[in-house]
Image (cartoon, rainbow, N blue to C red; front, side):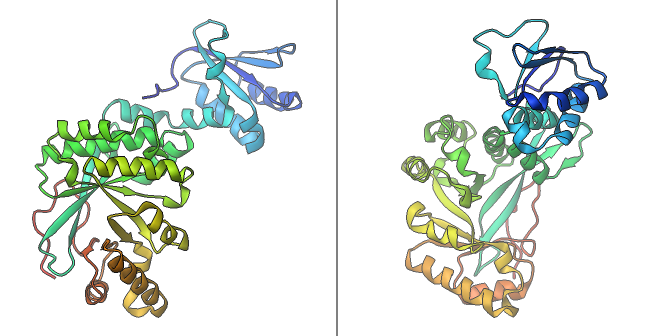
Length: 348
């Protein structure tokens, strides 16, 4: 887990183009920080502490474009120690460094175990009283106990390149919550493609994590989100196969949101597909959506893939999908995310 950018130290900045130095110096002067310019090294050094670093970085962010921020390298040295050869590999882009500084609140949240899990039920579409599974949805808490929206955490984590950390900790927290709340159903866990292929995210480690909380791997469904962002298809397929061999199932999220994830069916061969909630909305009144959804359901049935319709809010939507053989349903009509899992769904 990365440490928050805290403490007194010295920030080293190396612009790729020294012509950018004057504009950076202008921001350093405006921030009223102590700095030195090392022209021979084409470097600037800035004395920083907890009180000034975020404000300083905000000034630099607003005054320079993405290309300048990406090409400028920075290194934070704590105390008065000058960087040595062993420190150089730690240098990163100013853009990434700024994102991490702005995500300091997120790192503190994760370090202080202020991440929680809510559950949303997934029920049998034909008999909604029967709960098939629950999707684990992360929730953060601020220092006063208030809820932090998931999208805010995800945005900060993505910008700071912390999605792998956030995914891993939220999954571990979901296993703990499932144990604490004696969850009896299957458990859907959201995971991004970049996390799936991380060296630390292996079937062996996740198996150890879930078994330590009394959750069997054959009750766990890894729900691959943001599938359009898969950068390493062979590595993703290989890693998912290793999870299947360990007993886990695989679900593909947001099918129908675009043609790209339909093409993933033959590559990823999921056990479950979840139809995009935008496709669900008012489908009984939209002939275009109806054609698309019908074809997806027919294809899934032909490939022996279970289907989940997401975002069901109206009984007419549920009825439409029921008539066409969808396997499971999820949405506010059935139940909103809550700290306690649902023991039985409503009779609909």
